[in-house]
Image 1 (tube, rainbow, N blue to C red):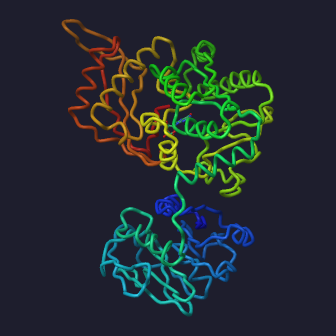
Image 2 (cartoon, rainbow, N blue to C red; image 1 turned 30 degrees about the vertical axis):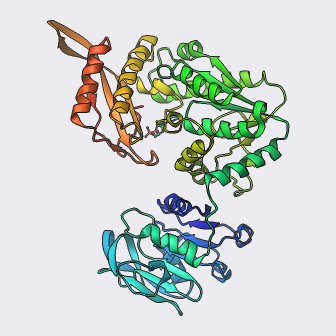
Image 3 (cartoon, rainbow, N blue to C red; image 1 turned 180 degrees about the vertical axis):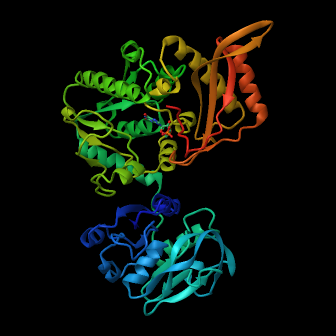
Amino acid sequence: MIIVIDFGSQFNQLIARRVREHNVYCQVEPADISLDRIRALNPKGIILSGGPSSIYEDNSPAIDKALFDLGVPVLGICYGMHYMVHALGGVIQRARKREYGFARLQIKTGCPLFTDMEPAFQCWMSHGDSAIELPKGFEVTASTENTAIAAVAHHQKRFYGLQFHPEVEHSVNGSLMIKHFLFDICHCEKNWTMNSFSQGAISQIKDAVGDQKVIMGLSGGVDSSVAATLIHKAIGKNLYCIFVDNGLLRHNEKTQLEKRLVANLDMNIKFVDAAETFLAALKGVTDPETKRKIIGSLFIQVFDAEAKKIPGAGFLGQGTLYPDIIESRSAFGGPTSIIKSHHNVGGLPEKMKLKLIEPLQLLFKDEVRKLGATLGLPEDLIWRQPFPGPGLAIRIMGDVTPNRLDILRQTDTILLEEIRKAGLYRKLWQSFAVLLPVKSVGVMGDKRTFANCVAIRAVTSNDAMTADWAKLPHALLGTISNRIINEVDDINRVVYDITSKPPGTIEWE
Ligand code: XMP
């Protein structure tokens, strides 16, 4: 395995993903990780990530310098390179000119990171500081116009530094450099595949759960479905899934899930119809956060009441992913501990006293999709766009009524049909309709209308942290608008949302 030390870069998860794309397991660890823990993890190589700090700032992130005595290859990226150079006796200085964006990298021959590359190509920079003096044994292996020391190496110790970001797609040959680091320098094996992962995970779940029961909430989304499938493969009928219909789902959602999971996998699923309870509690509520709180706490009540009907349950299954773990920095025990008993995340009450089992907690979203395919889940489930827990309630601005839900469901169905027909469903992170609290004047036939307005939202994104509005073809927008206005009563106007995130959010509430 490879360890990425997190110095605070917005790209540290990207570094881990790039490593895993080469079928090598990689884990992101905080900078205050102890040396004993690093030794216990026994990495083949260590990558020091970039970060927003300057090396000479107070409280800039630092790691135990004895790391450099472990005999393990190290690759420092941006701040990670500064840290290594500084720690080993070199000098870093605030550059006269900040370098941000594209730069042309000129490489020198002889560095194994750059094997089989042309002498000059584009790289992507984002730094204020630069190395100006190198520690003993280091040499410069590449430069750019503004940065004389753009890459460094200490060949004997197998320490390498890159001032630019190889993990970012704009850096030509970046993935190849990471590949050379993994295989030519660290001599890693290619053994991280979803097949090997699922075999390991299934046997770990079997060992940990034994003949106890696991309860799990299904949402119909990719993560909970893949997690449940994995647990189901391990313990079969001792997995009890609960699907709460909160009345805020899209058209046919419950039926589709029933068809996909029950029919495909013969899973034990209890469908609970709690729509009336949720809608009654939401009556008259217009504030987004209040809606969320009501829905969240009702979900817990309904789920808890159902869970109590399953005697002898010892575990609660959840589809938590690796980015949540990295971000929450919760207690985390590495690849061999996918089962742990800690606080309940996702708001399920402490009093359930169930141990948590999170079989996807080492995976990124794209890996979960690959795992789903390995486990034989249907394509349309694996590629389903994310759908928020509070459902359509946060896509109806203002009061959530059965009538407004009905309008939105019809609109959303048309939109998704057209997006799928255009072959765009998978390319978009999310595409959905939002029912606005405004009426506007229109004319249909010879009649004046005064009816509702819907907004169409379609975004591209990798992780929902940032998103861009999708440049949908005008003809497609036209078809969507025509169909909605013709087929859905009470809508006479369709608008397209052209806000990216930031400054907007993906959802409207
Ligand atoms: P925003 O609107 O914050 O959304 O840009 C980012 C991603 O999170 C989803 N989202 C939610 N998911 N409960 C959820 O389970 C929520 O309350 C919630 N709010 C937003 C949203 O659909 C997008 O994918």
